[in-house]
Structures are given as C-alpha cells and as structure tokens.
Length: 454
Ligand code: F0G
Picture (spheres, rainbow, N blue to C red):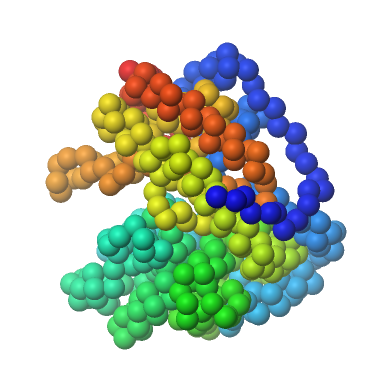
C-alpha cells in the first residue's frame, strides 16, 4: 500500500532517542512490565493513545497568542462558539477541560441509581462516570456479520429496542452512541444506524447523546463507504449526524486536534440550566469551562482543521498503511482498519500463551524491548472482571493490543520501523512467555498493575 502524502510540512520538531537494548530492559523491569509507568523520554515511538498527543498547526499556535483570559465573556469563547455552532448546530454548549468532564456533568444531571444507559460501546471513562452516579452502562454492539462490512461500530438496533422494552424507557435517562467506536476497533457507525438509533430513542422519548470525540473520522468513513454521501462534504455529513441527536459529549483531544479541551452541547434549555450549574461548580464559569482562553482558541481552529478532507484522507490512510504493513508480515490485526488505531489480536499472535497469562502484556513488553515502542493492552488486564452473578471471571472477547496514532506526529519511516519491530518479534515468537499480576488496584487496573514474567 502506498503511504499517503502528508498535507503539511514539519515546522517544529521534538527530539526522540532510542534507549539501548539493555537500558530498555532495565526500564521495563523497573516499570514492572506496565508501559504506563515508563517516562515518555524513554519511549521511542509512542502509540499509547491518540488523545491529546497530536501536533498543533502554526495557525493553532498563533491563535493561542490571541487567547483572551478574561474570566467572563472572553472573546476566545465567542470564537469557539462560532465554530461549534457552525459544525455541531446545538443551541447551547459549555467548554470542559476534556471529554470525561463533559461525561461527568451529563451523568450528574441525568442519572439516578438503578438507571440504564445503552450504547454501541461506552468508552471506559463514560462507563466509570455512569457507574459513579449509580447507573448501569449497557453495551449493545452489532455482531460483525463479515469483516468486509466497513461499519463495524454499529449498535444492534433490534437489541436496543428489546432492551428498552425489557427495562422500560422510564429507567433510561438518556441513550448513547460512540462515534467512531473505540471499543470496536475504532470502526465507524453508519448514518443509517445513527438514524435508526435516533428513531428508537425518540419514539421512546429518551434523549439521545453522541460521544462525538472522533466524529470527523466517522463522517469521513461515511463519505468513503456509503455511496449516497460521496458528493457531500464531511461537514455536511457531520451536520446530518448531529441533527439526529439531542446533545454530545466531546473530547477535543481527538478530532478537535488539541492537547487539552472538550465540551458538552445540548438543545434543551432546562437541561442546559442544570448543566451550567454543575459546570460552574466543577469546571469554571460557562464561557471558559475548564480551559484557559488560549485553549479555547486552539480548539476553535483545531475543530476546523479536523474536518478538512485532505487531512482526513491522510489520517485514515496512514492508519490503514500501518495495519496493512503488519498484516502483510503475518501479524493478526483486526480488519477493516479503523480511524485512529490498529488493533492486534495478541492471543492469536502468541497461541502458546493462555489468556490467563495475559498475551497482551507479552506483546506490549515485546514491542518495548525490541523497539522502544509503547502500545496499550486492551484485553483481560483492562477488561476482565469477576461477575458476582455468574461467580466467574468474565473476559473480553479478544486479547487486543492497540497501536493508536497521534495526529500529524509520525512519518512513514516511523511506521515502517514499527512494522520491522513486529517482524523481529515474529521471528522467535514461540520463545515469548506469559505474565502474572504481582499487584493490582481495585479500579481501572491496567493503568497501575504490576507484573512479572512467567
Ligand atoms: N470517549 C471516547 C470514545 C474516548 O476514546 C475517550 C478518550 C473519551 C471519551 C474521554 O475523553 O480523555 O478527553 O476525557 N480516549 C482516550 C484513549 C483516553 O486513549 O482512547 P478524555
């Protein structure tokens, strides 16, 4: 596959240096085989997340100089408002310091103990925020009929209808969709599916929210894979998507192309009054939320750049280039490739390591040892839990390791290096061993758990 030409040239750089093999071994041992504990200067290629890790443009940096740091009514807010109104078209919005702050406010306002919140797949912070309010997050992803379907992020509409009938609409304060679906390989949700979910929610009088952090990638995939939308712009498609729902939570750290920032947008004025009350308490005055004026300006420009189609073509092709390179050398990757990351099936890569021995940690450790590459385990360490009702450990369906691509950050040579490093690991794949947990916290254990080699 041809590498897409970057629609930009590099103006500022940050030096990276690869530690020697023996240094990497020491660093990983000291980090107890958890790559979250490694200092970034000890990482060569950092594919831990695409969130807040991208490069800003010269236009964003110059907008930062225009930041108005007034407590109330800052001009930065009105510049952001103009862009948010233009693209997303909601009546009201409040800036937040990042996506999970928007989730926190929404749940605090709407969720009571015992409530259910269905979605295609909730992100982990969304789930945790729902649970923190006593609610029950429910994931209803559509079973993948074939790997050739590009819209692998869809919600199962039949299951959604059935679920609402079973628990009663009055127990569902709002329903959700995450676009793209980070929990399903970063794959997009089709416009038909978004409309279908919207009809179901609306006919049951359930407010419908979209977790929109990768909406631009989602709209670009709709344009590319649904011929009915090929002549529409990504902005037009996005407007159509948002016309289906009643509000969004947004992490600007993804398709807003900023290092920090987010917002919560709604149409309902009564709901917005409640949101503003909580926002003032937790984030800040409603014209700055949890951000400085300069952050608001960076996001205003970033949101516009995030829907440029040459950028989105490059962005999604870069991800596919890495995925295709890995597939060609025999790495078991999830297909089709999503927008922001390539997902590797670590249990298939190390078939001799049982899932109880965390093959995802084997892979994330191997990538760091062989190349100084940082990835993230999204398998049993992140998601396995003891189910009280079933009295057994429930594991996720796949032992995934995610390689997320920071935006506008790495070049073809960096990605070729990642593929070569996988090649080295594959050469003696049978010599790798599993891991066991030596310590883990009560919640979100993947961030801080410690391991030792079997
Ligand atoms: N929703 C989705 C789908 C996300 O992927 C994330 C963050 C959030 C909400 C929360 O946004 O970080 O600004 O508070 N995802 C990052 C990741 C952390 O690595 O996938 P935030």
